[in-house]
Length: 112
Length: 113
Image 1 (spheres, each protein chain N blue to C red):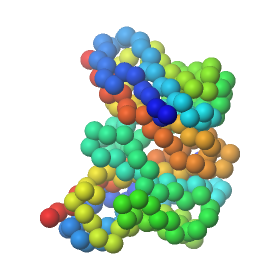
Image 2: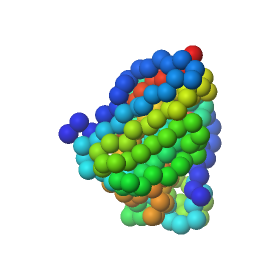
Image 3: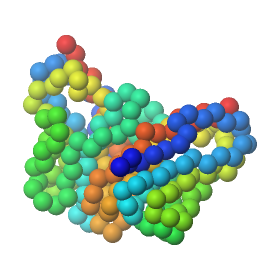
Image 4: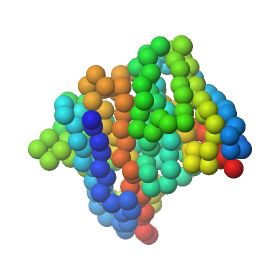
């Protein structure tokens, strides 16, 4: 099992550009989430999904879109990048609310 | 909605001393609670979890945590700190029938020789 795979690992965007952060898991987990990590702020939930076709907003959803067409994939789209979106992004998956989340290695995004 | 408060953004202890990292949660239903560790420039690794079985939970690397419902707390302890314990620690809460896992802001642990 590869676990949770995020691509790319690093990305630099210009303000106003759009891009998609990819997240795939091969553990057949129903629950998937996206977080951003900023110094002193911990991990803040952007969007999450409890199964294919079901998504919901987390604490900081503005400027981001998600979709969940398959169990394996949960891409995060930045619609029009802003410097405030400079952060480290983590994708996670888990079986259910009772179980621990498994994390990808993160994507370090810089918006200039 | 559930939330997590970690008291102390930075904690410094001497090698061999007790480690105590505090976590309080807010939840309207019995929660599921987790502690994660993050070493510099790495992802998050599960230390331990509470899912309504024993209230004292043992994890990896000698860490343990006790769920206290009356205090809404889930503090992380280790009897004797090692230099290798220096990292950032995150407490997280999940609720029954909820898909979101909410994290605290983290506590950075420093260990002095």
